[in-house]
Image (cartoon, rainbow, N blue to C red; front, side, top):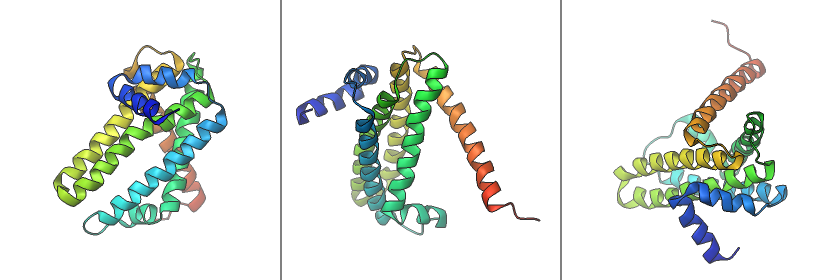
Amino acid sequence: MTLDALIGLLRLTLANPRAAAAQLKALNLPASAGWTALVLMSVVSAGTGFVGFLLAPGEMDPGLDALFGSPLRTALVQLGALALTGVLAHWVGARFGGRGTLPQALVLVAWAQLPPILLQLVQIVAMLVLPGLAPLIGLAGFALYVVLLSLFIAELHGFRSGIVVFFGMFAVSFLVAVVAAMLFAALIGVPHV
């Protein structure tokens, strides 16, 4: 794809996310392209996140400091989260009669990261010139990602409602968080009171 085609696809993503998802699906890219896109988005997101972390005023929570203090660690966590999102988007959707493939899911999850990353760059500039606006831009980026991902998964599987997909994503995220918490507690043990 040329730069003009990518810019056109980015515009379409913002104007009509489902149409953009349909175009990406139609490319029928191999799984290797999806994994490569996830790695690229993880690295770029970690880089912009690290710059934002360096510019953030005041003391950072120790947990966030441990995560965002290292771009490599942040990229690995981001890659794990994106990979899990792509696999679950394919697997759960298929269980409900969806038609999308894993390579398509990976490509769509990776592409859904691009507009929020661009907003993250705007947020970094805002941290320097209008610090009070930066948190709102961060919230807008997160909201944009959730909306894009919901609509992309709906288009991926041929589901009519992005809202139903959103609530499905919420339910799956909750279950993943519960399982992760139980595994974490089993691995490190629960302190006795």
